[in-house]
Image 1 (cartoon, rainbow, N blue to C red):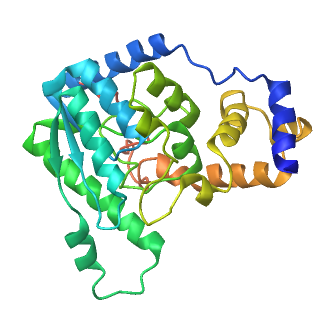
Image 2: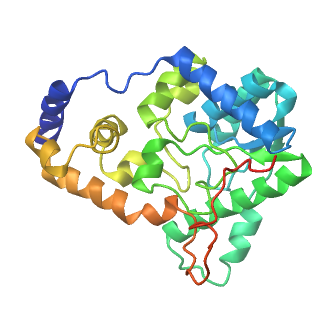
Image 3: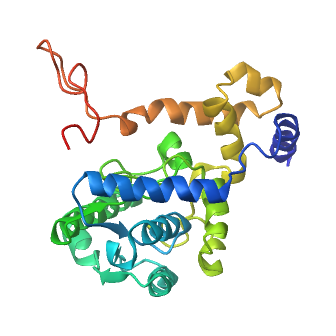
Length: 288
């Protein structure tokens, strides 16, 4: 309770509307982004892993508006322990949007891999599931002459709350500059079904797993702190002076710093005059 009271005091000082978005404007920017970048890459459509959660639901709605129903392929990839509502809600959203649906059960592949290592931790299994799903998405992208649409939001990217080369991978990501609370605002604007918007955030990697349970704080609280640290460039001392709990501030800053490698291309040891990613850098659509 003391932590919650401290956060509320700090929020009242910083302003409660900092994370509000102009939903109509954001929709226009993001649908334009999807349409333009898909065209520049020479692709005809996008494929998206539709999980039944709000992030992928929002990305699918934006893609449907940008490319039309034939421009989006929704791929559902449940594991045998996934909650039944995940597929149910994803399928219902796809029906409403009129987009194509594919179902690929990842249980046989994941279970086969861990047959010789039955004591593998839940974290290892979760990472394997995320990478198995992304492997399927990239394969289906070739089948459909499509780009893989990302669904990781800004909160997840900053905290490193995702699997590198798994759910954090994509060809383009329309929601990566929206905090989780902003994703929810956009979901209301685009009329994502209430059943999806009301869900407790979860990667659905094992029974009763929740995002906020693993992180140790709510999205509503951490988004406000991240906004001050990242967007407003507040120092650690500045946010502490506002009354934010020291333990939470230090934990969040530590997560941002330690997960930087997930947000960058692999490091290349420099030997030549022009090294890829260091000196040899051009726009993504260079030459198109």
